[in-house]
Amino acid sequence: MNSTFAQKANICSELLEDATSRIVYFGQVNYNMTGEYQHIAKMLRTLLAEHPDSISSQRLRAAFDACAGDINQMRPVKKFVVDHDSMFFEPGIIETGKNEVFVDCGAMDMSTSLEFAYHSGDTYKGIVAFEPDPLCYEICEDNRLFFSKDKRDSVTILNVGVHNINGMLPFHHTAEIGNSHIVDKSSESIPVRKIDDVPECADATFLKIHTEGTELDVLAGAEKTILKNRPKIAVSCYHNITELVEIPAYLKKLCPDYRLFMRHYSTGTTESVLYAVCPGR
Image 1 (cartoon, rainbow, N blue to C red):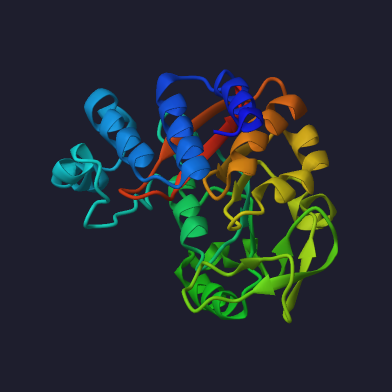
Image 2 (image 1 turned 60 degrees about the vertical axis):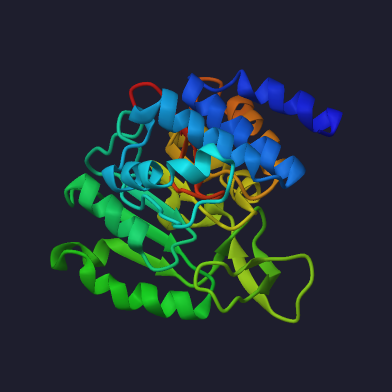
């Protein structure tokens, strides 16, 4: 492992609140550094054997049990299962209150926003969803109908990306829904906004960020909002080693009172989420 990244990873691990978080964290760090699946398999095996309560979904736990042979032999599992119900809403870590403003960065199909509406019992003040991919944006608009009729006017869907600038950035569209992302160079581009400069986000109480590798940039563009509101944050943290060692340190430096947790939500290498929560929020 690169010594600089190793040092940063060790420092970041000390910022995490519990053993489960550190198991998930080092599984992702080692995998991103080496590309060797055995690090994910070891992480899954340890969670299953020593921390089964950290696997909130019965469906995911059953999938882990069914794949135990592959996991124990350090082989990629045959069936990819994701716990969409608990992902971004970990029981015991995230509590959803009344009059919340939920900001969904990387809305894809509005499934996470709909899950938030369910968890809040439709008591939220507003939902602001960002989705730059044109096809996904159309799906988001179609799925607006799944929100309660009397709450649809409280749901704002913006066909823009989220970043640390207001402007245009190169964008790569993929055939697989949900995997399009900002890149360094492309013939295509999308408009992007800073959360700090979007009026609908001024009272944000909960930030969910899943932007395929630009999560740290999104957080930087929300710095004023985070300092002012101390929102709950659920951010995907597995796309690259830089974000794995920078995001926890960034959040803790920005708001030292944040408590940081990490959980994993699939039978594969993806879908690890870092949570930042302030006591009493």
